[in-house]
Length: 118
Image (cartoon, rainbow, N blue to C red; front, side, top):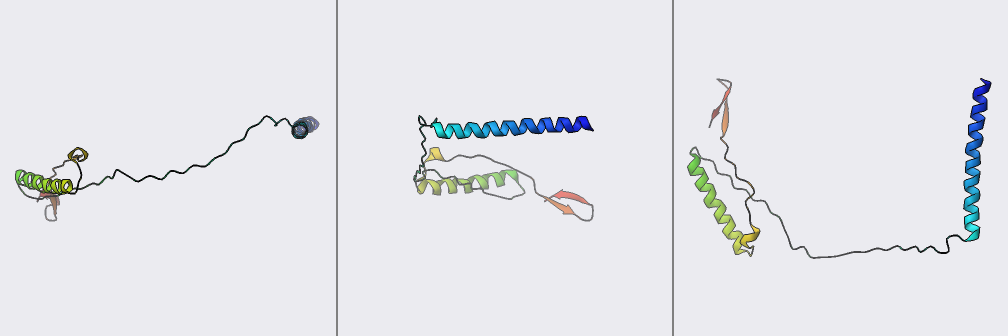
């Protein structure tokens, strides 16, 4: 037990000495003016610009039992949308298709407990 108390007091003494040395160093630094060659700069900047780009996502959904008919109808609808967008001043190079999906539509049949193609 005596050994533990001695080690604790040794540790506490070392920590206290470090704190005192650090405090004295700060006081000496303030009195000697060691920061005379220091340049401190701060600033703030703000930029205001008019946005010149906008992103819009448009989708067209067509349902038909015949895939070819649905695809053709969808194609025509989307072409109408694109023509309208162009008439509003958007250039062709700024219009792009990012996705195209064809999915079957299923309905749940309660009698069989299975889904069936609608």
